Image (tube, rainbow, N blue to C red):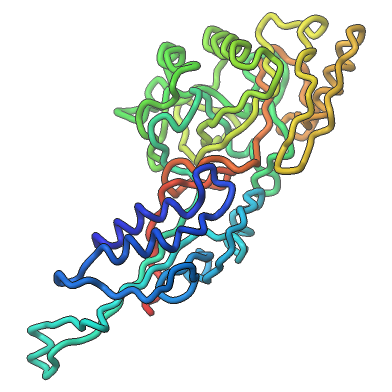
Length: 379
């Protein structure tokens, strides 16, 4: 209905702009949207008092497992470093708004009701709008033409930001790929030829995805090493942070069924991560190990990585090992990330991020901006 669509639009304000806490004004926004609608040109009834989380306007937690809604007035930020099953069971994860509209003070008239001897009848309708995780993404919501494999972000089925990873392609290090390239192309047959180099190069260090990304369609990708593309990324890294700080970016997450990125993969959501270091094809450990980035880094709210101290100029290998240990940079098998040419070392970020895209992705630490309506039992 029109009322439900308007509520769906308004419910995107369940969280504040940067996703750090639940918006205590979400109930008022939902109420304003509900009473703006009418039934048979008569305003609907909505029984709610300003400032309350009771009555016909309530925020709370929606359980997928039981298709039920529990009201919860909390404004605390959600802890997204959990499995989706754990989050579904977490009453403290405020992820939905429920609205009930009524025609009781002004009952509905009906010809068919009069045939049965009734002049009018009362009615009510209920809608629950649920905010999940970023899935289908709007233009410019992905920063670089790089994809991350979903398996590289999870430990025992739960999203983890405490362990770093490396994207390695084309070097002599034997490890499963944890990422690759994309042109964001979902038109025609994206599996035919995969992501083309010229398209990747044109997108590198640009504005991100120019078109919306649909979660239900495969996207053109490529897992092979593209030296020129990698060089553009390397130059952009230096220009952006000068090797002195983590480089934040939001990337597309894809399914990698064979532990490698093929010519087309299925989108799974989005993740914000910090690039901690990049080695280009000419980097040698004796001269290009981390020297400048010597500040401690906050992995998540109040959780610091071990401080990376200023390195010794005389033992490059030791400096690299200390750097890897400080930021918990690992291969996908859990071993410490080796110093490798043409590699990107990254750490998923679990701080609150601005909600992005439409609900429908997996939990990689980014809540969606646009909700979906869910069907619950009628009141």
